Image (tube, rainbow, N blue to C red; front, side, top):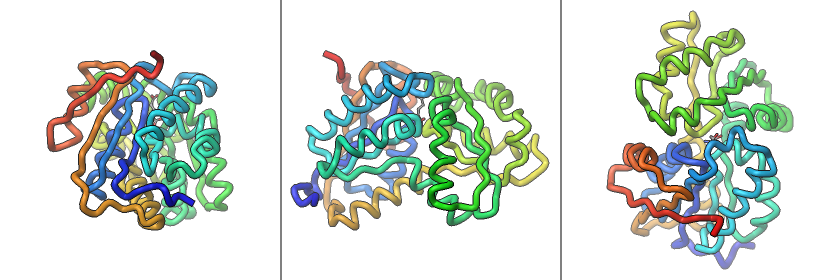
Length: 275
Ligand code: DGL
């Protein structure tokens, strides 16, 4: 079905900005020999507040670019893009590449490890309003009670400040939501949020009178990528691990923050989707 795909082809990963780098670095850790092409759609950040139609239009352009490379597997490293466009992308990509999103592996993980539990989900407005987690939990007949809460400004603030202490006050404002204090676990359902995972954990430890597991799904998603490649006999076991980073708008804050994710220096290239 995907016989024209080759192990030496790169893995394409995209997000609106730096969020997907949390997943990309987990993929690099799990599969160090793979070539990676990363696209950050910084010109349209944040996705979380955009309409479904706008996100679909951006995402299809990015998919076209990644298919042209050609990528053997495309990882949608963005919950908002998955919520708004996964079904469309699935149809568009067809058998031209393998496709992984960040939501299905996380829902399977919850099903396996948190049965009978209340699980908080913090995410963008797009992800929360789409109710995609609730629908997928139901479709899997998973015994999970999801408690979703939109934390609208968080991704943009992370894009600007990274893991700076200034983030504590914004987090405290969002996490003060009473229903988020009743959960057994909290899933970071936006790929930007693992950047401030320790701050979220510290909030729960100091302000909530209950042990709450903070779930960062990056490694879970990286494992799903590995499994898909293994299944299709497309793992690259002796590649050079080359990485290319494209941005639809070059920003210095992205440049600064992106360096924190990888040990080697990274070179960012501007690539306009709209010329
Ligand atoms: N990192 C993205 C997500 O997982 C998008 C954040 C944004 O651009 O609003 O939803």
